[in-house]
Length: 179
Image (cartoon, rainbow, N blue to C red; front, side, top):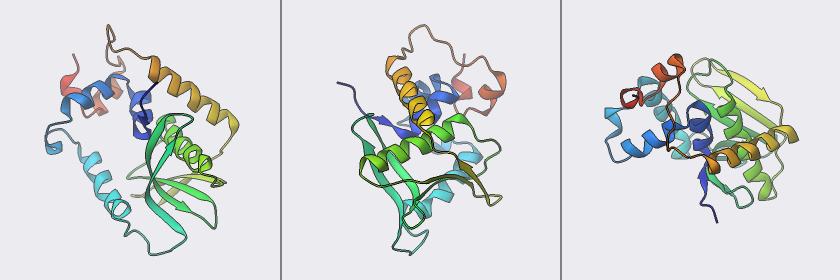
């Protein structure tokens, strides 16, 4: 029996699997010691979602916990618009639609569908420049998600090195821990 995987872990794993390990190292620290300005902005932008004050519309879920017993996932959605059947993941600034962003959104959609809620649109929303990126929801993406979850469950940190991609390492909040 496996434990549940946080949906946010999907993005972290695709960025660099070692970042999950580093996250556990810093978990008990004050976040001001290691959060970058981008993370601080993202956290600030999510406050209205977490407090459920982003909108007063009754047909919009905001900051709602979701889970999938089938895939072993747990997390929160940012916004779900019932009339449009649209799921929105908000990021402070989207420069590129990274696979990790897409997998988070697909995971959230799967969780909603497991609850019997139909999802027709997936949208990544870039807050700083007010841009939306619609993601085509497909069985291929759901299959890719299941493969990713399998990789995460099978991953061992023993004898693994952090990403050798210098650009990724420079953007990582845990760059001071890389060896």
